[in-house]
Structure formats: C-alpha cells, structure tokens
Image (cartoon, rainbow, N blue to C red; front, side, top):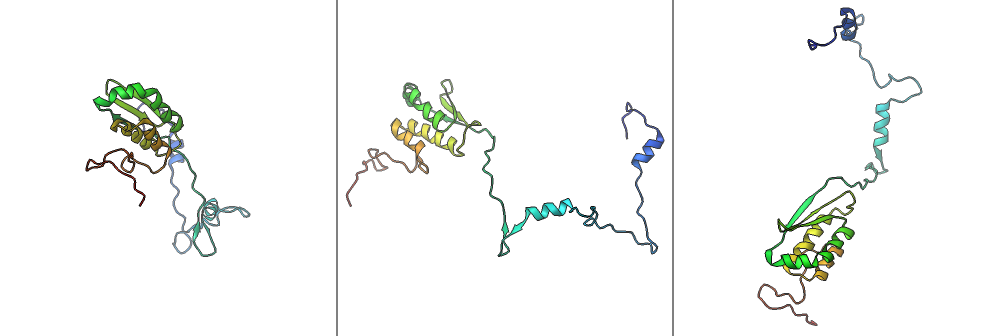
Length: 185
C-alpha cells in the first residue's frame, strides 16, 4: 500500500506496470515451457553457462583445478593489552626506548604504554603484514615482564615458532630449583 503522502498515479499506468501476464496455453491445454539454455541469440553463449564453464576446470584424472588463493590481508584491527606487574614497571619505563622499536619497526604494530592502567597496549594496523605479529608482540612483552633479558626477549620476535613456554634461558632455574647445565653427552 502506498504511503498517504505519495504521489498518485493514474489508474491506467498502475494497471500497466503491475499487470501479471497469464501463462499461455497450447491446443492441448498444457503450459508452454521455455528453454532458457537456447534463449540467447545465435552466436552468443548463455552467460550463466559461460560462468560455470570458466569456473570449473578439471585435470586429466577428473579432479577439479582451482586457481591459487590470493594472499589478501584482512583489514581487521585486533588489539591486546599486557598487564605489567608492579615490580617490573620501573624496568619497563627505563627500557622503553629499547622495547618499542622492535615492535613498531619489525612487527609493524601500534604500541603504547598506559602508565595509569599499568599495561602495554598493542594493536595491528593496515601496515601489519604478519598474521602472528600481535601474538609475537604479546609474548615479547610478557617475556620482559617475567624477567627475561631484553636481548633474549627480542630473539623471540626474530625466530618463528619460539614461544615463552618453549624458550628457556640457560641460567634460569627449572621447576626443581636447580640451574640447567649443558653436558657433552
């Protein structure tokens, strides 16, 4: 139903635009079926059939061949916040000029130190190319908060598949309290 403020059309125009054609019947009372595959002019292929032929290619063994996936980066911005323990806040402040350049230049993250919330906040940007950059950055800051040397924590950024759980400093004590000792065995 049109709105009461809509412009009124002449009834003839309304009947022409909204008229539904009735199906045509042949001599036997059956409906006429239209074949859409041959409905295009001669010499031209049906665009729907053309799409399906170009989209599906099969190799000699009958398996489908698909084009290579495009490596497109989504523009989804993700953020993480790493809380800093009170006893590591002053070392973080003093080493901040050495901490943020690897995060910003190497991982292309946006980073800030929120002193009032006692946290380091990181987020991805349109320049971030590594999908795991945010996780690496979080591991780096957590390692520093756990007491790792700055150089050891930076090594976690540069090496793939290296996480806090798998990385151990040679002088760090293990769970029994004894230091790890390298042997020649």
